Image (cartoon, rainbow, N blue to C red; front, side, top):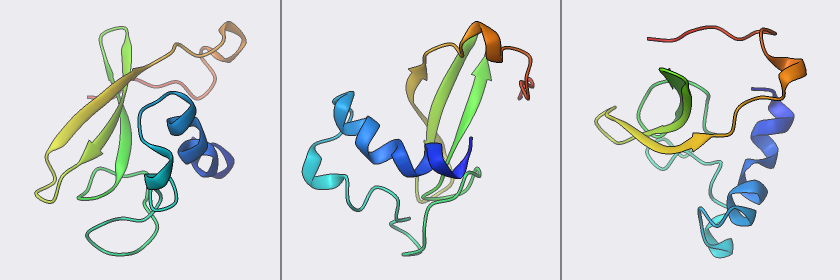
Length: 88
């Protein structure tokens, strides 16, 4: 996931009705550290996880427990295989 894609996430989350617009501004701030969120599996941050054929957007609670939020759409056929790797 590129920095540009991460920066677009709040707007996309509102468009997809995952969050209300008033929460979008703070969406990229880790609520536990006050720092920008990071693409890593730790409290307040996010990652993606492949489970079978599904790819999930995951958040992590204050104890580091994974919460699978939404299954992501498959990548365009032209992108399949480019940087695509299986995760645990």
